[in-house]
Structures are given as structure tokens and as C-alpha cells.
Image 1: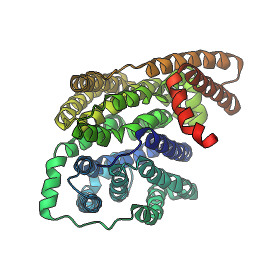
Image 2 (image 1 turned 180 degrees about the vertical axis):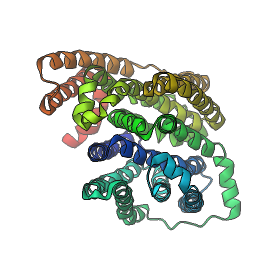
Image 3 (image 1 turned 45 degrees about the horizontal axis):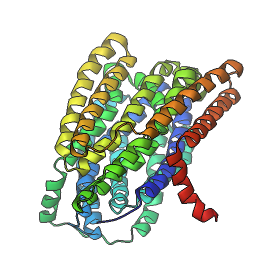
Length: 475
């Protein structure tokens, strides 16, 4: 069992993810401006498909983390299993994508779509294996730092190659090169010689991963379903509008993703020692929406101006999707810790059932609404599906851990602070020219300072945690 400081590792992970998001955000903006919405949507559709395919490795890793937390296997076996599964899966997917080159090119309009997708899968699978190894060892900050460094290094490479007129190929090549550069450093930090797993060990691994693998596949398919539906039912142009709006709301998941990634080990380990993990779960829930709530408030007030100034007038249709996606991220931020807690409670079957149900609802309702009212319809279907996931998982967690408060004071403080921030931003937008880069930057900056100040003033518990971390070092 690996013991670690979850709040500290969460902070490190959140900071790394912030750097990653800045790099991804910058890449998306430049690429969106250089490519038309159709090409932009096509490239990001393939990236999402590659991410979905690599979730076989993520699912296996969830099972490995559970075994490692219970002391069933050692570090060498963890590394060996993850890298072996990543390698075998990559070979299989490359074979499939090559044979499916015709349909992929027809869907995306890209000549080398199968090669692009195969590259994404290989790169993501290897990277996920390394990142999840660090997570299993309780080094959330290192895992997130590795992932962030990939995107930070890829940023100038992707942008430079796209500017050099390599188009989608430059985007894919820069992404792969950014990862290759980080691999030697990651191997040095891992400092472990992987043990090649036997067939018996792989079968044992599958016993733990048999729910986690389909859960990971279903879960990521669920989160990418909107882009798939828009690409198939409408066009990659519509998918490009959606992706542009999604990128602007992506920071809302910083804290939720960082904190939730360590909950499986924490909850499973605590229960193994017959301790109650309720406090850890509640603290994670309390701050998971720390960024998503102010983003939602900002999207409601100055969302249209932000989209147009960020991407240009060609992406104006994305403004109709921004507020809905920001709300979706807020709900999703609360669902994430509940989902990982459910894994830690050894209830992966519940995650399978609820995510499969949400996916079915999202597909059926999404198809109808997209046909009836266009791209905004898929956002409405996703909001309903995510709400169902949240309610079901909340009932599961509170049934097992009845002392967990799903609406702690910290969330109430954040909601109040985000609401007051929204009023400040609205007043600022009336005074300042929100259609200029300088004006919108000033408005957003004022809103961020307002929100952070209000939270620190109103949330005594957060102040004490910060003082506990900073105080000893300051003295």
C-alpha cells in the first residue's frame, strides 16, 4: 500500500494540468485560426478517436492500481503489465486502422486519416502506461507533470509545422515528437526495470480489469460522443465549432481530474485498513468545481465575445454551445470524484451500468435533437445524460459512505463567489469594450481576482490549509 498526501499531490497535479491546458489551449487557438473549421474538426475528431482507443490501457491501469494498493503486486510488475498491454494493443489498433483507411478518409476528408489515427493511438497508449504507473505509486504530480510536459513540448512543434503549411500532418507529427522527447526523462524518473508478465499474471490482471476496461472505453466514448455524432450526422465543421467551445471550458476540470485520480488508491487503501475514507471523499467533492463554476459564470456573461476574439469570426456558431458546455463541465466535475470513489469501493459494475445507460441516452436523444435543432441539441442530450450519471453515482457513494456530504460548505462558497463574480463581470462589460482583446482580458482578469478573493475570504477551511502549507516555509 502506497501512502501519500492527497491534497499536496492534488495541488501538484492541478498545477501541471494548468500548464498542460495552457499549451493545449494555445495549440487549439493557433491551429483553429490556421485551419478552417472543417479541418480543425477533422483533426480533433481523430485525436479523440485515438484517446478512446487508448482507454484499453487506462482501464487495465485502473485494475493494476487496485491490485497494487492492496499489496498484490510490486512496482516491477505494474510497469511490466502496463507497457506490455500498451504495446500489444497498439499493434492491434494499427492493423485495424490500416484496413479501415477508406471509411476514415471519407468521414474526415483527410487523405492519411488512418496513419494519423494510428499515430495518436500508439503515442497515447505508451504515454498513458507511464502516467498511470506514477499514479499507482501515489505520485500524481509526477504523472500529471509528465503528461503536461508532452503537451508543452508539442505546442511549438505543432504550431510551427502547421504554420509551415504541413497542415493536419504537422499537427500529428508535432504531437508525436513532443511525446518522444519526454520518454527518456520519464524512464529515468520511473527508475524501475519492468518485469515481463506471464500469461498467468495477465489473466490475473484481467480479473481485476474486466470491469475497468469496458468502463474506460465506455466512459471516454461517452465524453467524446458529441463530436462523433456531429461529425457523422452533420459535418466535421460542426465538430470544429464544438471543439472550439469545449477547449474554452476545459480548465473547469483541472481540480476534479487531478484530485479524483488519487481517490481510487486512497479509498481502496483506507477500506483495506478498515478506516473511513469519507472525509477525503468529501474534501475532494468540495473543491472539484473550483474552476468550473467561475467559467460557467463567465460563459453566461461574455461567452460570445470570448469565442470570437479567441478564434475569429469563422467560429461564431460556437458561441451558442459555450454556456451549455460550461454547465456540463460543472456537473462533470462533481461526477468525477464520485466515479473514482465508486471504483475504490470495488463497485466497477455500477460504473459500467450507469455510464452505459448515459451513453445510450446520449446517443438516442442526441441523434433526435441534432436532427431537429442542430449542434446545440447534442449539448442538451449530454447535460441530461451527465445529470443521470451524477445522481446514480451519488446514491451509490452515499449508500456505502453515509457520512459523506455531497454539498459541503466549500461548494456553497464557490457558487456564491462565482455568482457575485458574474455580476462584477457583467458591470465591467457595460463599462469596458468587451469586443477588444485588451478589454476582454481586463474583464476576465477582474473576474478571476474577484472570485479568488471572495473564496479566500469566505472559506476559512481553505485559508487554514493554505496557511498550513505556506506558513512553515515562510517562517
